Image (cartoon, rainbow, N blue to C red; front, side, top):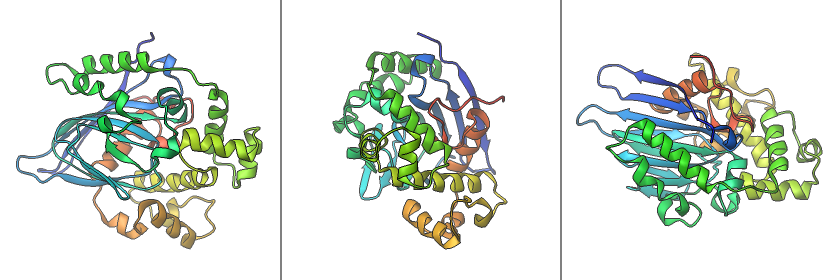
Length: 311
């Protein structure tokens, strides 16, 4: 088994009394190429007596997260979870509102190829789902990781080694791997404005494209293309704090009204409402991810994984 090395970390310390966020990113071993966005360990420290921090995650691929300390309160659409040390989420086209106290957390993001190799359930069956992973049939096979990843007597490096070993034992091949990679690359490339042109690029019929997207990506091809366009705009805004929405807006939008409609659909609020909120965790995390990992968000990672950047 190849060795997965730490690719870098970042600590964000705001004003006195503000949350302290540290994110460390780990490059998956070669045998996992294309399966994961990254493995990351997040540390959130709040001042004594401080209230939990609330923030909104943008739409993502599927994830498993393990919390040692204060478990989250989190919600996607009508689905909510509270007090679970192991939280599973399916691919999302809606924001995840979460509240966290002082905590240590391991996160694993599954790209579509990773979903194919590690999940029996169709991605569409858990789209916009957040749940107690141990209690949900799609995620329960990961529940045994909780003890190792939340062991207070082991180091982060020991936990990382255990994570690699457990995932290695679970991985299985999928006959659709080549087609998944073609679809993923075409989506991230962002050059397609219709399902027909996307299908042609992938050398697939529209019907086959739709079936594969539902099985491994979680949504229809049309919605996936729209989500990519939206995420390019949102991350551009988040990474340039001086930017206005009109400057961050993707060129494929016809006008600002169309962008505003899609923002409301994907984030359930207007761009101005989102901009007016504090994002103490997400902004720090996205900046660190872009600096260390080369991509600010899961959905923008290419199918081979984002290349780690110098740090």
